Image 1 (cartoon, rainbow, N blue to C red):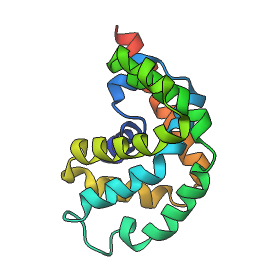
Image 2 (cartoon, helix red, strand yellow):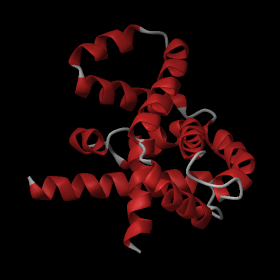
Image 3 (tube, rainbow, N blue to C red):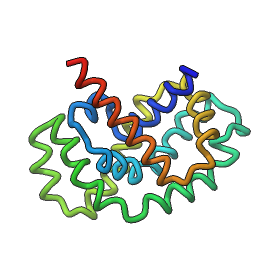
Length: 168
């Protein structure tokens, strides 16, 4: 059970960026859900890429990957506007100068940049030893609509924020 929960927390942190960053920012549940919905398709593709060497082609994320990606893309459509502000704040919390830079960029120009940033973060942070657990969690969550998955991940992020705040 601990491995399954750890994999869910890993998915949450991968979708929302650094878990410490998301916790320090005190994202609302709506913000975390919007960022997650926006990030899910690219995040999933990055997880597939990173785990390719660690999992067989019969793993859930490959056997059902096209169907899941289609569903994630549908859920992600139109989420950029809701996610934009939280993403700018997340970037600015790591580097205050970024807020001015990102705020001046046209939203449509920033979106592909953020997509690639998500991919890069995931590929660099994901440990291949977590691939089997992430694949298992994805298969268990398969019946959920992607919106519910985004909301579940947002709940995990917000609860992690509360837990961290309580330890401060």
